[in-house]
Length: 239
Image (cartoon, rainbow, N blue to C red; front, side, top):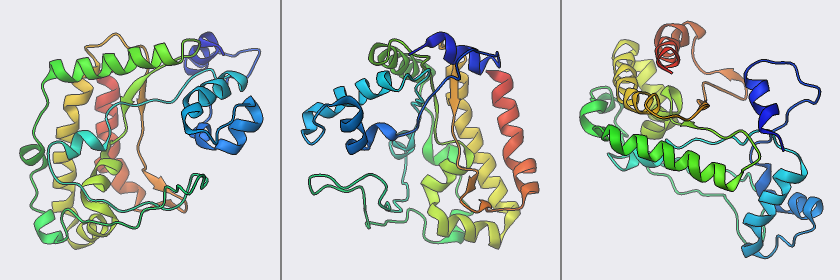
């Protein structure tokens, strides 16, 4: 594992060895068992097996974020869209979930939602501490790699957490101007997390967003350029 390789990659420097990372492979237990020799059918062995796998495959950085849907849920309602099968089915367990609840089934009511007012603010002290503890825990768990913290629920992913696909797309189709106002409100709510991160000493910020899906963008690219990307520019300038 190499912190130096990971940092060089993010600094756009050429390295003798191509730096490596993986995304969620560490939960595919048959592969982990084959690579590490650790019996992953024993649930208690899995954290150590995942850690050994990262070392065996020589990660240079570990993808990590702190601000996820649970911080939205703590302030107000969110939509549960269920989950398709992704992880392998072991010991009778599966990540399949057909439980679906919609926080705002009426798109007209959703178009009137004032997100900053409904979902409120965390204190900056609390958020700074969240980020710093998360980063410190990651460094302790993965001491040889480049670690980071960041935000998962950026504009598209966050709006999706609150409304789900059906309401999200209905809102866009019914009244794009009012929908954009809702999106602006959500981005205003997101500002608090970026402000807090700038007050930490964490060297790397991870930004996640599901702006496209398997067949590409789900909206006109001009919509992203006009409504979504300006917020990224503002946040990245802050960082």
